[in-house]
Image 1 (cartoon, rainbow, N blue to C red):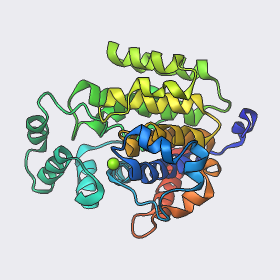
Image 2: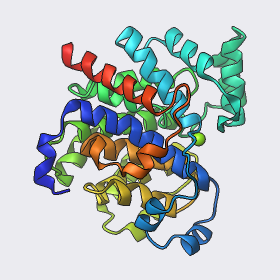
Image 3: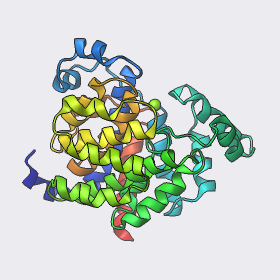
Image 4: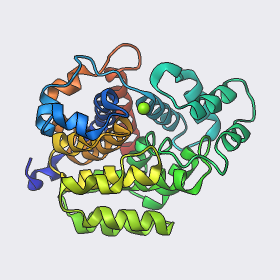
Length: 316
Ligand SMILES: [Mg+2]
């Protein structure tokens, strides 16, 4: 897709592209979670090979998409992040076998049992979790508040709090949400503008340094320098960099982060959300879109949520 075509992409297409792009990245990346990049590279030499020959006919999503659905549902209900509603959604949707980390399971089970989940979160992760669990689910916040980046950041903060109290865990969610909002509102790709708008939302010197590094990367071979781990600081900048290196190709943006291994489901989910928000639903390869699981809260349900959020965004 050429950059001058982007202006014709509707808000609805971008919201759908973002949430379904996240599910596609999560489902495809989930098949490679924790694998070594050299092992993956032996099987798939290019993103195109990976996307055209996925290792599965059904893309089952993991905790990333399941928790994103909760954030979208909570936003649709309240038009803002209200912690009580958000926790209720996390509990109702919770299927532990979706790949939740041990800490996240304890926190959600404490919500379920009406226990002090904040205390559980703090005791399980001394100082709070600095993982990417808040960033992986934040996409609907970036979409719904896209016309006010300050609101995106403050609402992303609220959406992180039930499970994340460490500055880096929260900041990762805020930066990703702001990046999604910028991508969703850009008509033509402009890398300088994208980073000029994003960087002021970095609060810590650590994130500032990593996002500046993401901006300077000029080839996909260097993506691994930003990390492929479960920490927010070693995954959010990687997703942002892969998107900004491949702004016109969902296949390349998402494929390249899977090829570097590590926390592939979450990094591909975040990248898919960014790419879908900029390029819209039609940029997601049809074979992948069709293969997202569709029972219960599957593809059609996520699509419906995206459409509802877009309608609500446009009417307020
Ligand atoms: Mg996951």
